[in-house]
Image (cartoon, rainbow, N blue to C red):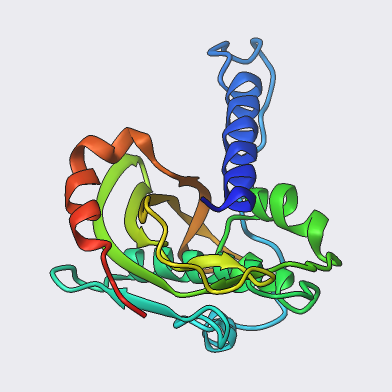
Amino acid sequence: MRIRLKVVAAAVVAVAAGLTAVGCSGDDPPAGSTTSPATPSSAVALSMTFDEANRKLPMDGTKDLPITWEVSGAQDTDLVLAARRSLAFIYWEQASTVWAPIIPLGRYFYTEEHYQKLLAPYANAIETNPLAGRLWVKYMGAEKTGPDETTVTFCDDIGFLRSAEQPSPPARQQRWNLESYRMKKVMTGDGESHWLADGLIDNDGKREAKYGAQCAAWAKHKP
């Protein structure tokens, strides 16, 4: 499995737990106190438009890690398309050696909280052994999990995913993987609202009962 993505996913869970512990005490503010309206999570100044950022994103992967999408049976709504972009961004990053030109674009696909905690610290990272191979991705479904929050799940065929230093091996035994993105609709620096990912779950066991068998039956591609 993709160890680096699992580390990111674990960090997302830890961050979310910390935010819950801090922000959900349930106590009312003291009498006479005033509170400021919450600042939209991604309302920071942007250096380009979302359309410009989308054009820079290799939605179909890279030369060394192409992505083949299957979204039949699903309307490619703004929500689903945003989740696909979030997934494509992560694999673009993981398939690259120099992250400096890539990480800043994360603001257009992930919330500001996620960006600051899990992307910005690696803006100058050099990856000496990036991902390579082939990846097939199938849209499985979307589950509303809160106000302006929906989790979008994909099935990945990772049978031929490998590190660049490895020779091309035979297809791995465990080929299928469920990957979910927690999407939030937030106000951004352009004054509009956009669906952005606020976290991802790699190897999403919670949704295995619903999607696992279908995903396993589908993940049998040949390069």
